[in-house]
Image (cartoon, rainbow, N blue to C red; front, side, top):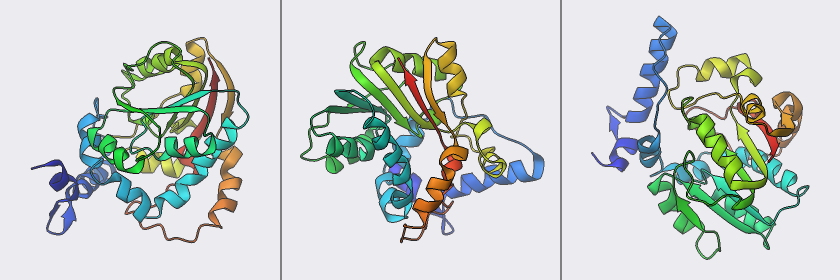
Length: 261
């Protein structure tokens, strides 16, 4: 079975990945069982990366997720920087926007999924944005390679046993600032915490506590309590339907953190 057939294949009309999702949900709801978090998600994202770019643009996800991308752009406008990279750049959606908004800056990306990077060749065609294949826990970059490093919903895929390695790499590679929009179950709604409890690919981390334990200064820390009203107003301007099979989870799925390196 190849990657495409696994992700898009079906059994009696149901996608394989949806079947696995509902089996995990059933175990959790009926028996209170949660399966171990994935220790390595490279295979998961190589499979999902086959169709991920299409999912983003065809299911109404892009039109809602862009709110968080706008948060990044607004923050970057207030910072002094000449270079930027995204850890877990996927097919290049965020780095393309950063390059468009800050044309004179050096912009790059890193991802461990070959299928995502393959999609990026099409999405970033004709734009000077180098992207590298590599692990966020062992980045193929020299010290202080970039002024600003960023992730959006990526470090929540890193196992607890490796998250500190990833954050140390961010502090090594970034010269000035680190920005994350990531999942922290201690700063989310009860309903979303319940929705995500059984998922083996989504992992919560205490980013503020971890960076402070590394001796880094947290300059800004915001939760959906801070930007939830802004999201509600933004959502009123969205004209497309949300057709994702799980639905869009809203502003409570991320915290926003700015770290001074």
